[in-house]
Amino acid sequence: MSKKGHFYIRTHKERSQPQSGKKLGFLEKKKDYLKRSRDHWNKEKKLRKLKNEATFRNPEEFYFGMENKVTKDGKHVTIKKHLTEEEKKLVATRRISYINLKITHEQKKIERLRSKLHFLISRDEEKGNDEEVEEEENEERKRKFNELPKQKKGKKTKQKEKKPRHIIYVDSIEEAKNFDAAENFETIPELMNRAYNRPKLTNLQNQVVLGNLSKRKKIESLRKKKYQELKERIARLSRLKKIAATLETEKNLTQKGTRKRVKKATINHPEIYKWETERKK
Figure 1 (cartoon, rainbow, N blue to C red):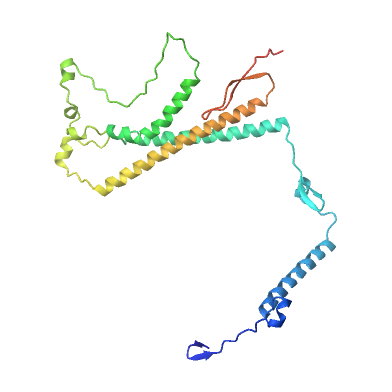
Figure 2: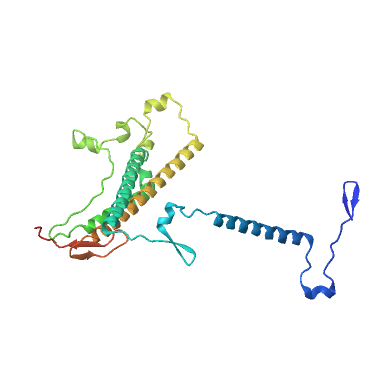
């Protein structure tokens, strides 16, 4: 007996399957019968509805989906439309134009980010923070340099990377030797490694500099996030350029004329073909 509040309620036990009737299978209880009954009548209702729809069907009924479908052995099968060569070319050009649009968007976003982050690094920080960003650019430059036609042995060209620097002109060699950068910029030598937020001696004497560590950490984390975003965008831009190049080659391969493969496909660029020049009539 179970207790509910201040009253005891008798728990009614259901009758189990008798030993003699075990061979007949599962003994159905009322809850099992209800499930079976509801399922049966739901099926009957659906069948009745379908019969009514079939009886009162409009023989002239039409849907636009019927144009691309056929019934085979009582099943709906979609008809596959084969595109013509002109239609295929049109689809390819649309895809290429969409990819080019995305490339321009990414380039603008990268330029915006670079313009914001250009003056937010010191010379010491530049080596660590900008290494990952420059790796992608160096790879792109190397790829472009390798694709250029090789020159003769006598002539050699070197590609030097330009780094940001501050040039100061003086009158004599002695002045250049005795030049003091901290004195010139009117600041302390400890702040000379900075390319930004470099206060002068007058400001340091008159104002109280508050070095809040938590704020500094927030700024550093924000800067790292921005550099990570820039790195991801540069990688995405290179992927988009590769996709655009592959689509362009696929489009060109549909054109007529004898062609010859000049370069095999690599990770950075697709196959390069050269078409023979034909005389126009």
